[in-house]
Image 1 (cartoon, each protein chain N blue to C red):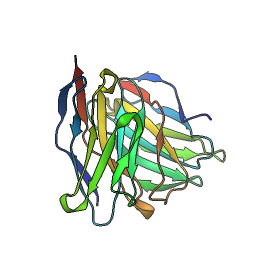
Image 2: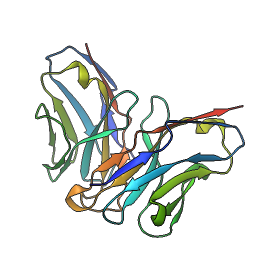
Image 3: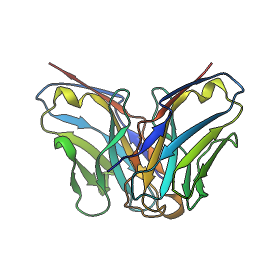
Length: 114
Length: 115
């Protein structure tokens, strides 16, 4: 079975500073990994996905993530935070075949201050 | 291009009642998955429908059931509601159930409150 662990439940950064949201995964095969964002009272929006192509994945709104097999990590980064980035972020792993459900991490709440 | 839509937006029920939630997938998608997101938690997989059949199921009791219609839309039914069923219910659609690289697109959710 696959799983993800988000290492921080809450991250606070100042506007204009870098963002790092950490995620480790566990999977018995090459995983498909995703980052989703959820703004208050909104649905989930896909930020980016890794599907065994390039290990550095670029997403929307300036976010990117690097797949590191040796560290079983898929950390999300952004060079400069914006106030509109404040939201809940979920690291997600997807199974394959008849087990293609999404398994979510517990989420990281990103706070951006002036 | 219409995205995933869900109805109703909010719902209030009392313990023991039954509820039906509805989902219309993104245009061109044929697979619907349902998730339950309790307050402060990540979404938990309930089940997935493809070709009008339940293809996968998470760790949820039989009180949770579903249906998929020929037009690919779907319903989630919950019987004998418990206080613990209060949550945001999310519907996600995708193209095909077994494509490991396909993306699931989520609707805005239905907020269910059980009193």
